Length: 267
Image (cartoon, rainbow, N blue to C red; front, side, top):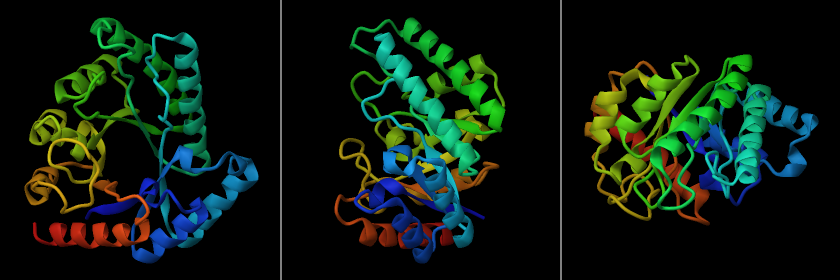
């Protein structure tokens, strides 16, 4: 049985408490909250409790997406890297307070186009050690997300993600498979085959292999029936819908859910 969540990014123009109420009313099983969506004024313990209590009352569980806007956990600029790490560590604590068992994290990327790849990989491993140590305290799974095929991204292909999973060798480091990102490299099925049950969370949206990357379901060329047939072998079946059109959050969140349920009922 698939559990379907809505990314708070789709409803970016709405306040987070209103987002929870709406997502529950539409019929989603959970909400994936982008950490940036929780306004600084809401990050007091009292306000976090308010979010958790509302989610509990609605029967809506929470997944946290770590912050990544203007951040880079493998930046060659140590001040930028340290601040990026600090914010992701804070989001791990946020996940704990909101009873989230998953934290989706963007891997680091190149600082410049000629960044030495071995050094980039090593810095990512060093950073992940900090994050895994924090995750171990709370028994939270860090779900490292595959990136789209664009300039300065390194963690694009399944073999690269598998390499870092094997290197870190932690029960609390898994993969978030972003199907739309994978489609930009044309290797969606390879991700599923090569990563298998290392995939612990899934993001879906549509595209035609390039930007705009996160279109609503049905607006691109991804063959979701085929993909979900392949995904049936996974142990973890939780998927967050990310396809959006700015300013049309409520409408698109409803359409996405209807279309995904139609796909799932057909396989």
